Amino acid sequence: FSGLLMLGVSETLGWRLAMVVPGVVLFFTGIGYWLFTQDAPDGNFSDLRARGELPEATGENSAVQSFLTAAKDIRVWALFIVYGLCFGVELTINNIAAIYFFDKFDLT
Image (cartoon, rainbow, N blue to C red; front, top):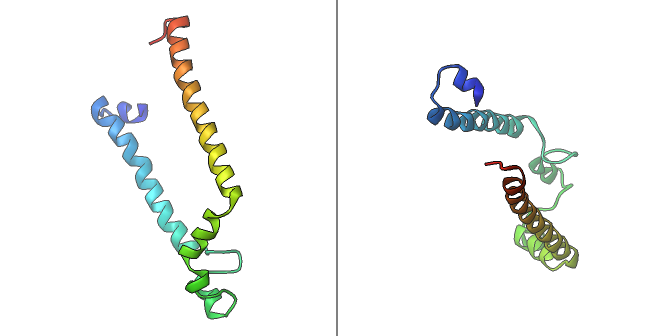
């Protein structure tokens, strides 16, 4: 952000540009990732299906069936609950810390 301000950009435009620059970089990184990486360690899914090493994604191997299998697993629900509780604690601590620093050190 300060680098943009040094270039003479106003503060109202600078913070917006500070969000656009990483967005553009990440967009092109995503395109490069799509073009130059493979789906799995053994190769791309289309190649694996063509060689007969990976079953077609229909019926028992469909995305819906995979999701339902995961949704029925108690370990998935346990992880969901633990993550939710941890994130709730994080939000609470962040809010309490802001009030504490404001009151204790007269920070704004």
